[in-house]
Amino acid sequence: MRSSRLKLKSPSGWFAAGREVEAALFLLSESAFRLFVYICLRAERSTGSLQMKPAKLAGVLAKSSDQVLRDLEQLAHLDVCRIIGDRIVVQDGFWPYERVCSEAETGSSTYIAAVKRAFLRHSCVASAFTAADEKLAREWQRRAVPIETVGHAILLGVARKYTACLNHGLQTRITGLEYIAGILSEAEHVSAGPSYWTYVARKVEALESEYRKRYKLACVETK
Image 1 (cartoon, rainbow, N blue to C red):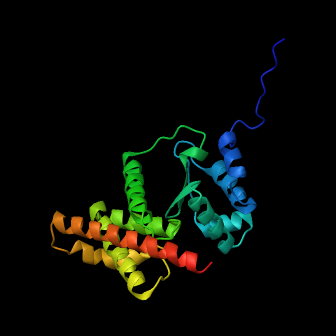
Image 2 (cartoon, rainbow, N blue to C red; image 1 turned 90 degrees about the vertical axis):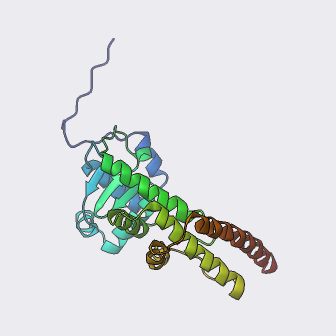
Image 3 (cartoon, rainbow, N blue to C red; image 1 turned 135 degrees about the horizontal axis):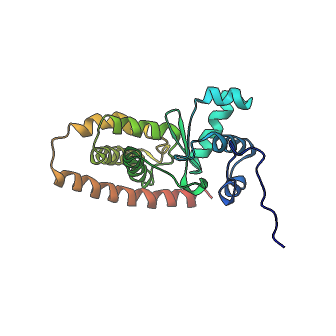
């Protein structure tokens, strides 16, 4: 006997909650999950994105603005959503629909991913690449700053941090991309060829190796 086909009471306004939502359920805090579900219900199905400012979200969900900002940071930190200005984009692993992305969006994602990768690969960086970091990287993209130049600024920044730590003792690690922002202009105006940046990269590798050894030794001594 064939079972009768289930019918939706409301043919519109629903969301396909499957394994993607289940994954978020066991990953997020209760508050962040509630925000995630609201985003999914209201997001454009073709893009998986919702344009809404934190203050508006706070009003709709009856939360404080500070709580919404903390929840958004958790969504970004756990790679559940990307925060792009006042637009929230659900990541592919948590979005059940086939996404239609524009060429501009694809290029933007590639640029942000490259900045994140170059920044987080260094041991002196202790960052989750927050929404503020992504916003800064997106601003650099808007200004058409070459990704290579951003990479050069990161090299200069971490080289100085390693040098300071090795000369004056272990210090607080770099916690945000803002640390690099002040060096970006300098990197843009360095009139040196590729050989110079190859030298800087090798210097960073040597400093990082020494930093790791000393940091490990310091940890052993404090036990």
